[in-house]
Length: 500
Ligand SMILES: NC(=O)C[C@H](N)C(=O)O
Image (cartoon, rainbow, N blue to C red):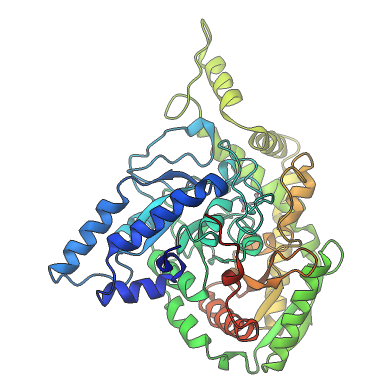
């Protein structure tokens, strides 16, 4: 295994800038790794044939003395929910099989402007609906820690690619936990930025009032570097916040000393612990709290009584928005078309959607259409929106008592394939800790907090901050990471099976 694939993006950037290694060498090392482990992991739906050309151009420009951006030549993987001009973008669905968009998502354009090297498109649950990648129309991704287990979802491909050293970092999207829950179960770092912090232009929409694009990586600093590369105002996304953002990477560097933990008020959300949480996850969580207290943090218990309704509200709001967002897959404008001999336009649309959408997508379209139908609108969608406001108020109250809120990032470690496939509610419960942040628009980070004693699999700590205070997540996250790594003697990812 080349040592280049185990280097962080920050280290690669430094070595590239110093001329110690070329972008072609770094890219080739990752392509070799992809070739070696993809048969087991299946993190990618498409590997970028142009990756080496992009790398070669970076090397040529560097050789000619051109001043290049800091991450020039660093490879990155991209979740297939994001539109890419030169690669198919399927969102994990058959209905978009082979579809190559006519434009790049803004975040992808920003990676290109930063001269990073796109390695390919990563697997995901169809249209980001799921927590295991088992709903991908192209077969599941396997968890690099245990190939019989799920890598989380919907962004299991991005998380597994990073955990298996196929990419130093990757882009994901998080509507109810799709960056953070895969992060938790693969021992990686995942961040859902503040709603509006990162452009969604060219991100295939699931639920527009919840979706955010964000980074997945092996270190908090790397997540910050990628976050910085994609953040900032985009006039093409009406929900994009116009203000400038502080550097997340700088916050991570600043946090690593641990100084910021002194006197930090860490709020433990009572409702996100206890029943339904795996014993080993709870054990690691409470040990982490003890370590934070020993490092000078003040641990306070906070209550968010309406969080218990978050999943119920989410599964009305999300299907309502998704059913309307997915109406555009009508067989006329783009994507799959199933012709029906002698049929009407409606017949063709019906046949296409029947053939093109998988079971979870159909379930949510039916749920959403029902929730929005005349006579039920106020009872379901209207009530869910009111619950959403109550959850936002719970956050406001909690952030008066605490600077950050913490919980386990997922209730269990990675489960086995098939375990929750026939039980949608059991699948939905995976996001019990992550959904509140989406409903309120606040940022959340998941980072490794050790292996669960009963199964030796990664557990994740979630840190949440008030809206627009993403930098605080990085500062605190880097401090927690340094604290835990000092005790383990090495980062968690160093314990991952080598594969390949
Ligand atoms: N899209 C997400 O953030 C994942 C969530 N598990 C869902 O199925 O909606």
